[in-house]
Length: 287
Image (cartoon, rainbow, N blue to C red; front, side):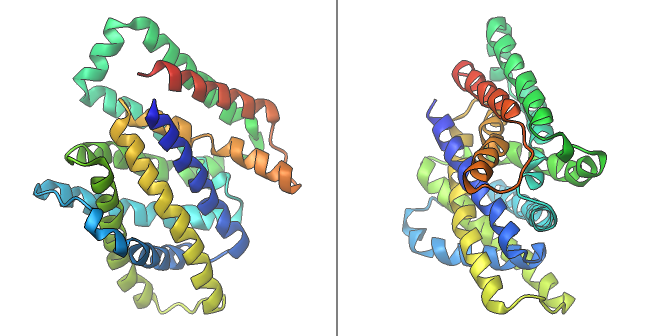
């Protein structure tokens, strides 16, 4: 169950980067462009620890991963700036369900476990039902039609990304080395994809450069840590959707954070308890 610990760390650091732009309100594309650059600079000293696979397909997956990340992170940062960090995370339940279905279809081992142990399948199904119910009730105002339409494309892309990430990461011999390499190269590709578009737009920033760089630096640290922990969790988990359930505790962390900081919020504590219980069920019955 060590994957659950890494997934928990990934989720917490993910919340940090999602909430950061609620304060800075930097344009999503601009933030993601400079965040990718700063992430590369942060990871440069760790190159000696990285594993470099000799499989060409691995690098094609990285290109796909980077392309999806550019689109999704830009959309999420904009949602976070316009609304709040939790709404930017609403794609998670849809992405989790799609990821589970795709991996279940692709993995004979996963199907064999559930067919051999139907009680385990029942526990996991119960956990998923509770998780979706909890997210639905934690703050009903967030789950409107407009919010659903805003996050649906993000959910589909993230589900594809989760599956191909697990396939690619499992090609490595060293869990630490392949995870660092994966995050490092993805950020390089994300910057190379974003920079020409960003500078081609010739759109003047409405914020001082110092603010943009400061926000990008903070987000780069949280994002790099979150992605690294996510990679470790995905390698170890039997199904990448399970990692999504643990990182999907974001609404619960936001609920607690807003209560501590006394930020006006109408989230339901009952909904938070339900998704917490769902994550515990899946964590202890999925292996």
